[in-house]
Image (cartoon, rainbow, N blue to C red):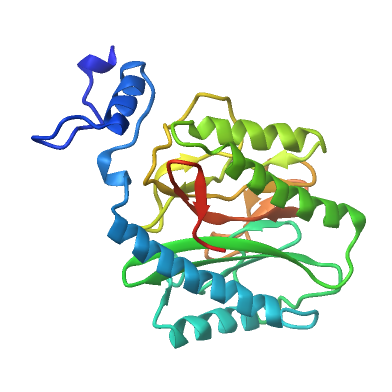
Length: 288
């Protein structure tokens, strides 16, 4: 079935001549490529709201960076995040989201993501931990995560954390206006192959801003020219989860909430994440 016989995703505004952006999007849609709906293009007002949420989100992670140390529990990290939000009239998006019981994800060593803060999870010298927080401010969402190395760790873990950050940076570099989601995944996967690391395939980045999770899904592996067309005004996350060993993962059966994701070989994992605005010149980081 040709695109012309399918329901179009992109529509020009009624009564207006097509803009250059309209023409470019329709060109790719006619070529059979997946394109965004107009609803995925944020207005200047919406972008400003997401930007302000990003400022708070960055403040939360900065506060964690000041206080994180060996001997503290991940429950204490949750309390730091929750208190900062309360002081800045913001809401932790994770809290009670589809049954998630806490306000932040704290994922230590082999926990890939969605680690639940607990009093009994105490940080030890040499641990690596991902702290992943999403802020709601005045109805707008911003989402980011950082890795922290507790004290001195092994060279293997230190390299993994560094390469995971490089993967995020490489993904941001190739994310250009009118490129495709698959371009991001291809570049990240190519970089990881140099180290024989596994790129998690079961989880991905996503659109964000007006909701916690929006279109498109941003896979961190794949082929150039595949996936959705990326257009100025779109807001999304890139958040590669990079494993020291296999890319395969499982959900911890001992987690009563069904959230914690662990590497299949129980080797360490690392992840960095930013909320990004696509502009006419490339991505702008909204969670610095």
